Image (tube, rainbow, N blue to C red):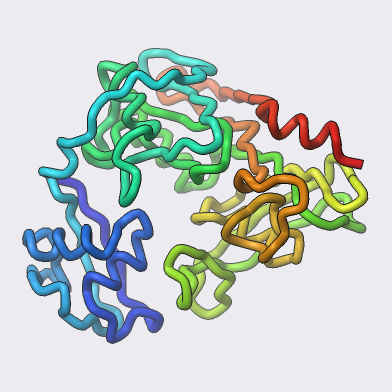
Length: 303
């Protein structure tokens, strides 16, 4: 059984245990968290706590285990996949916008994981049965390239490159507004928004280091196409960072109030390039994928 650990910070002190878990792991509903607690899968400073109403204190260590019975309910689904590359260790998938990467609250089918367990006989299980093969993820409405691992050796090798920031990840983003600069670096620490558990916010006190490089690719009258390069890989990092500098991503339903002018289908963000050292050959590989047709159509029709 896999587990996840977090430490209670100032934003969570005094919260119910189920609320704290749901706030930290936004793929968990409060009901799901309560079931984990009641099932004996949650410890606080090493002690099993079975009451969801338990109030947490500052700096306590919370360890949350998966519910094994729920993990076995994931079913294979014959969902077509855009496979860019495949070998015995890994697969590069070009994920469409609108597809959730792994099952979670409100998404028990139609995910990339449902498709993966249909199409591939072996997948890594480092992240548990609910996330086979998944080393990193993209938001539902973000399209583009993902590495999926077929075995634990490949998974750990790729995960190490994510951890030491040697994996290259570049995105195309259509953002609102215009820039005087040709390129730039956004350095702004990120943490969960204390007023909305579904959002991430810049937090100079409690946030974790977050760095995004960008360069301008194409200018329009009211928009700019940029290439964003992740130096760190925090949740929602590119979306939050561009909103923070007053250039929210076009169509983003969560960040940048009323920023959508030309698209309402979700953020126009595409993971177009990924590079890493192959776990077996030790060769550096780079893969790329153009923006999807709907994204390109919007670019072609902007003035």
